[in-house]
Every structure is written in C-alpha cells, then in structure tokens.
Amino acid sequence: MRKKPAIVVGLLAAAALSSSVPAQAAPAHAARAAAKCPQLDKKLTWFGDNRAKLQKMIDERGTCSGKGGPRPVAAFDWDNTVVKNDITDATLAWALNHDKILRPKSWRDTSTWLTPAADRALTKACGTSVPAGRPLPTSKNTACADEIFEIREKSQTMSGEAAFAGEWNHRRTVPGYAWIPQLFAGRTPATVTAYAERARAEQLAAPIGRKQTVGTHSIAGYIRYYDQQKDLIRTLKAAGFDVYIVSASSEPIAEAWSGGVGLDRKHTIGIRNVLDRHGRLTTGIKGCGGVADGPGGALPYMDGKRCMINQEIFKIKGAAAWKQQDPAHRIALGAGDADTDVTFVNDATGAHVAINRNKAELMCRAFDDADGRWVANPMFIDPMPHKPGAYPCATTGATLPDGSHAPVRRADGSIIPDQLDLAS
Image (tube, rainbow, N blue to C red; front, side):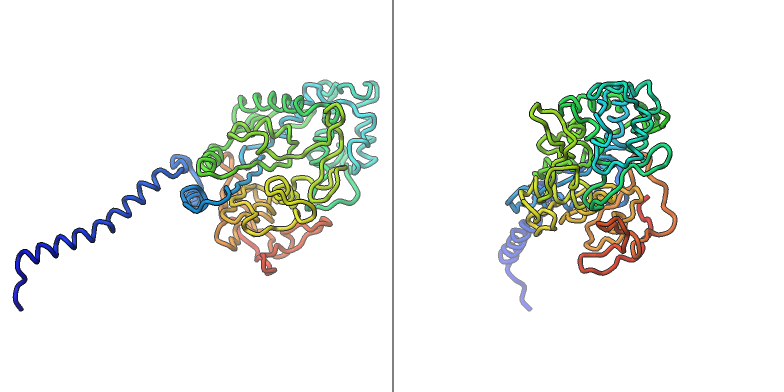
C-alpha cells in the first residue's frame, strides 16, 4: 500500500481537528450555561441526594430549561415545613400572655361545632365580668388561658371533654384550626399581623430549645427559618418559579412571617376571615370551590389546600377546584410536613418535598415514591427519631371525609404496601 503524500496527510489531520472542535466546545458551553443557572447552596446539608434531585427539577422546569411558557408554580406549607415550630401557637401564646383576646358575647358564637361542654368550661374559667368585646385578662387568669390553649392543642377541655362535635368533611376542614382565626374576631387583620410580628421577634430571639408557658401549658418558645428552605425558595424564584405559601394558619399571621423568605402578601394564602363593614374580623370563614362563606367548612387543609391553589393561583372556580387538574394547571413543586399537606404535595408534577414528621399518609406516599419524584427529608432542626415498625399504609394510613381511616391508594387505585421510615 502506497503512502499518502505529506500534504494529504496534513489536510486530513487538519480536517479531523476541525471536526472535533464542536464536540469539545459543546460540553464547555453547556458547563458555562449551567454555571449561570440558579444553584442551590452546596454548603447546606440535605438528606441523601435530595439536593441533586431538587436541582435537576429546577433545571428542567425553570428558566434554564429554555422551554418558555407560563411560569412554573411552587407551593409550600409553612409550619414545620419552612420554619421549625408553629407560628399560630406562638401568636396565640403571645396574645394570651398580653391580654389580646376579646371576650365573645357567647363562646358558642365562636364556632358552630363548639360543644356545650366547651362553652361551659370557657364560661366558667374566663367568667362574665368582662364586658363582651373587651380584652380578657388571660395573662393573670391562668384557668382561662388554659382552657383556650387546651382546646387549641387537643380539641378538648381541661377536664378531657370533647370541645368540638357535629359533622364536617375531615379532608376539608378541622374545627380547631378554624377556631383560632375566629378567636380574633373584633380585631382588624393589621392588628393580628402586628401581634404575630411581636411574637415573631420574641421567637426568633429566643435560643433553640427554649420553652414558654401559657397558663400551665409548656410549649415551644422558639421558631427558626430553615436555611435549606429559604435557599430553595430563593433558588426557585431566581429560576423563574412563582412561589406561594399555602398555610392552615390565619392569613394575617402567615403574612407576618412570609416576608422572611422574600414572599409578599399576594403570595401568602391562609385561613381568611370574613370582614365586617368596619374591616374587622368576624367568626365567618371564606369558603372555596363552591363552599359558601360560613363556619369554616373549607379551609386550606388537606383537600382544601388543593382547592385554594386551584382557585387562587390557577383561577379555577366552583366545584372543579376540588379536583386534580391536568399537568399544565398543577404546581411543579409542593412541600409539606404533615397529612394536612398530602393532597397538594401529591399533585406536584416535578417534585414532592416531604419533611418527615412521621405522618402516615404523607410518608406512605413519600416512601412508596410511585413517580420517582418524591424528596423525603428529615426536619432540618431537631429531627424526629427513627420511626420503629412500618407505616400502616395498606390498612389505616389514609383519612376519609367522614373521619374514618382506609388504605392509602396510588393514582391507579392500587394499595400502597406498608412502608418503613427511610429518612430520619
């Protein structure tokens, strides 16, 4: 075989070199582009490969995807999802310790579901000497503060009698959640926000692990924003996501906190009281999905969070707001920590973030990971201990509208088998 002339060899080598340049340049270009995409802080600790999963979703759905179209939506629960501990507990505790609850004309007026036993207990403990509409001296009246906080905490009186009774859809509301916004009837939303801001300042200044006393109740006395969630929200916003808080807290209380992660009032959804003609809160609660304003039959709670997202964010009105929508009208990321969040977190099409507090229905779905997009993570501060045994997914993991329990089912109707705790 004859050798090729040197000039031919040179031309072939040059051609080979030229053809190889784009193949080498493309990865370099991609790396430069990726470096400009919003990135989660690698110094913050996530469980396992959760940061990588979330980054992948952000890159696929955010501005770096190059897909265009409507902005993707992310929705976060608040208590124990974005912060450690409970802002409603903190605000109610501050209000009780500073005499900010107004005496109702009758305790039965505060909730359709309040039992006669609770009415009697509150009337006895709080008395009737304070005129209706005037502040109760709960900072000094330990018995009154105790009855109110026991009903908040356990939906029962200090003597152990049920505080709420009757019928309600257990996937749409819980009377004890509605009762806290109802207790602030007579105040303006701005006043309740101011109370929450005072409580916020105290809670953020308190050392981690601090306890506080309300009546004779000892409860958590500190709250902290989770750095990882603040960073996730920051990164989502930078990547073009429209980010919302959807909380079962009173909306004026949630608004005192959401600015701490860069979200405004328009992006903060909570329980909304009906206002009177003077702009003051009443015991009426705004409805959702065709459920009329009233005693609180449709809160941002379980299926009610889906309803609020569909109605307030995607502008789906009437009964359709209770149904899971097509992927184009669903959130890309949902984050929660409890069964109260399971419906909207499960609706997410890109990532389901489940902060593990050992809540059965949520964690059954998280550990089953049917679509491969679940991100189960221990609490970032003082996580729950490892749960012994399995979650009862195949028997009683799900809550039904009548309050009974049933197996947790996948979208195809199949039953999720019992799951072990894999993130604690």
